[in-house]
Image (cartoon, rainbow, N blue to C red; front, side, top):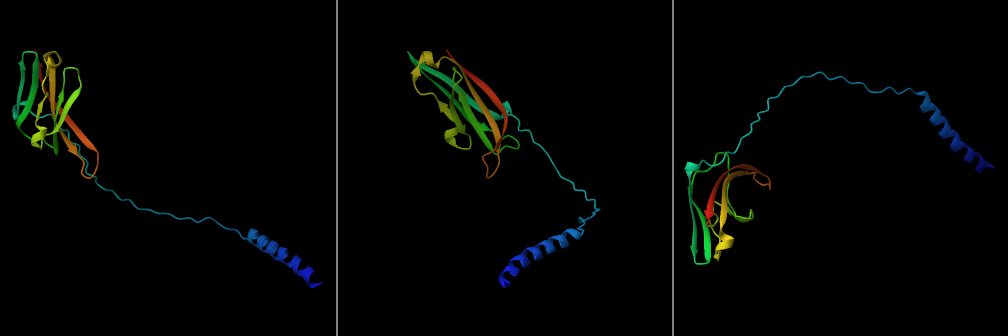
Length: 155
């Protein structure tokens, strides 16, 4: 007979504990904080301008012989653009296709030659753009500056 009493004792104990907890009023915690703090955050933005035309030396030519020709564009001396840590030369052919993008910190990035091609595919207006960028260190992000644009017209 003792086994039956144990079966009823466990639910009675649990019920008593629940009723006891229900009778206890729990009030929410209250807190009040009073403090004012101001901070000054220095913020600035820089606009990367186009290189000044009088600070860049560009040599350009269209050389042709009979039915073949070649467009050449080279940048000699140039003055770095304020706020830029990278400078680029971009060449666009008469069809609007970018043919060359060069890093102007390297000698190989300062000049472009179209290679020998037919005079008909060479003819038209070639465009060059020189611009500065600010490449954010340890990131793939960059701020793009305004471009100094010039043209080369080939007959």
